[in-house]
Image (cartoon, rainbow, N blue to C red; front, top):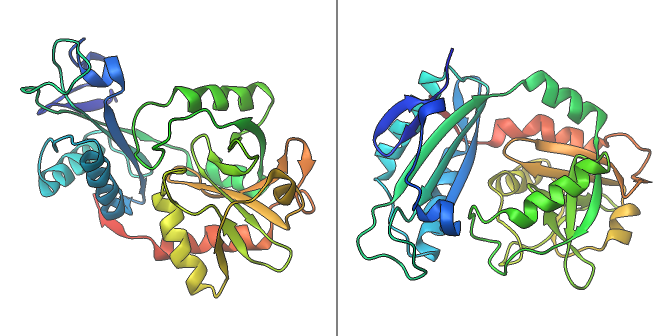
Length: 286
């Protein structure tokens, strides 16, 4: 079955979907996006994703392309037309098309693109059962990482750096050597006494939706959370390490820069959190 995309009011074959060559998302990365997990015919944590989308739009003084209820209808319809029950739905909003100039255009209308794709849950579960490797890389991104923009070239370079070294993810390091987050995920460790540690969500990292829901899971499981920076050395000495995102959920890390974490296998806390995650997450029918 051919894929279907939504672009500015029209459902169109994925291969024919297009935006204007002077769209500011294309020329300036003047755009924001969200990715929601689809699971068993439901969208996971879509309310929190749309809350973050609204915040990103407000921070960039970018108008919304439509109301929230209408956007939910589009998300559901794109998933339905693509027959995606397990996978993801992607939405991107740009400031719109206008003659190329740096200041905000006065008359541009926002561009909205929505796509969906199926994913193999079994493959993701096998990866989580085995655990993944990460490598470290300097954090070269701009100073407002809390806004989910499409200005992702530093992330692309870090992810490519990881893949060329046989790793799944790159953990980004600030100028003082502390871990900020992954190129497309939030970073976590578990200390020797069982505390889950992740960096505080400020302008230095994206407040991941999966991260936020996992904090609820930690409380339900009676585990202690510390929101603070940690070094690579502390991570390598940790009892466990893991990463979180909408597409990886909770995935254990078994090595960092080639150094084995714990016993080199996914730890009990990461496995528990992954198993408990979807019971705590918001689920919305497609």
